[in-house]
Amino acid sequence: MQLQPVNVGHKALADYATIASRGVMDQIRTLAEALQGKRVLHLSATAFGGGVAEILYTLVPLMRDAGLETEWQVINGQDEFFDVTKSIHNALQGADVTLTDEQKKIFHGYNRANAEALDGAWDFVIVHDPQPAAILDGGRPGGGRWIWRCHIDLSAPSRDVIDFLAPSLARYDAAVFHRREYVPAGTPLPRAYIWPPAIDPLAPKNMALSPEDAAYIVDQFGIDVERPLITQVSRFDPWKDPLGVIEAWRIVREEHPGLQLALVGSMAHDDPEGWDYYNRTVEAAAGDPDVYILSNLNNVGSVEVNAFQVHSAAVLQKSIREGFGLTVTEALWKGRPVVAGNVGGIVDQVTHGETGWLVGSVEECARAVSEVLAEPDIARAMAKAGKEHVRSRFLTPRLLRDWLALFNVLDGRETDAGSALAAVGAAG
Ligand code: UDP
Image (tube, rainbow, N blue to C red; front, side, top):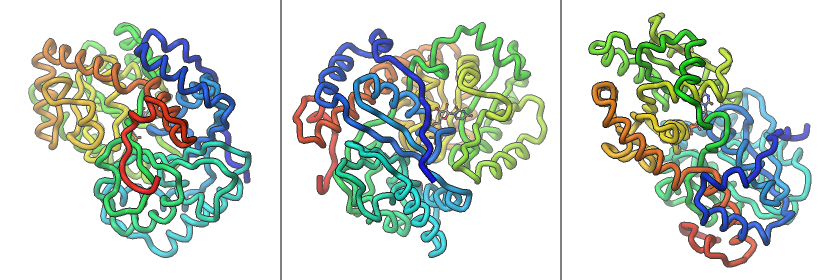
């Protein structure tokens, strides 16, 4: 069975010229010159739900607009495969998980089948996350360069599972991580490059939405727009801690009886565990009419997520582990006060007391939300600082620039942007 191509539509780089810095746009133009007509393939596990899909819907059309022949394909897999890859994902984020021989066989079996289904000739193939990571185990199709793009936190992985993946990862020409701390120590890897992901300021999820339009949209989901609302947007996953969010909301509600909570979480098809956790979240809310648990199944798409973020007095992302946390970037870009877990890539985005609140427990989370509600002017000023931080570091043109710089590096061309890429260790 062939891999599924994803239709990403069209985007024009020129539209970003007024939002991104002039320097970045110039760099993109220069770096793209030597890459005209190069064939680039992005491989991922799903075209729906979660940060990777979110990024590729923008990055792929912009790479095309820069002159590279770019495709995105999704690997084939059934629940038995995604059950294993979810265990791998959890283990890599530090859960105490070991894989059985049967699970390893399933993982390799699906990777082999996907390798056989892969066709076309590519100059660069970017393999996202662990699900398709073993795709080179049976040999390297064609002469292109292969890059593993890791979107998760590998700073304290289960030794067993990282050792299991290491031989597959060593076959790549380069690896890319969000943060230096995520490059796993003691694991033989190709040369690692470090850069964070980014959001698309012009996508329906992030485009400017007036407070009135946002209120009009959330009203349709039953939210009382006259009373304050706090929101967390994320998959139903223990690492995102929706149950902790409900507990924090209960504490804050003692002082603010009218406070409403929305938990908005899409169901990714590579996340069979999601339903379990969704049900646990519904149970924890215990039918309280001021808790709204919504998902794509309630027709919450990008514009609705945008509206919930814009309308919220505070946006929460109370993660316990977080690769980067695009939801935090999205909320900061909208100038919303952010209360988020003091973990992973979130700390690159939120500086406690300057651009938002970093919290380590339910109690801290509740206290931070109370502060936001009590001092809206201070909260707004911090959020504004957060927006400028996002503007300078976490918008898509910068991400495109980094990819183009890496392609030039891998082709052996020296460029200023290429030399500026942070690289860590190994082979190369
Ligand atoms: N998202 C969404 N609808 C949902 C839940 C999440 O559109 O119901 C999006 C969210 O806006 C963000 C991405 O999915 O763009 C999640 O990325 P993040 O880095 O926060 O977490 P991940 O899911 O990759 O761990």
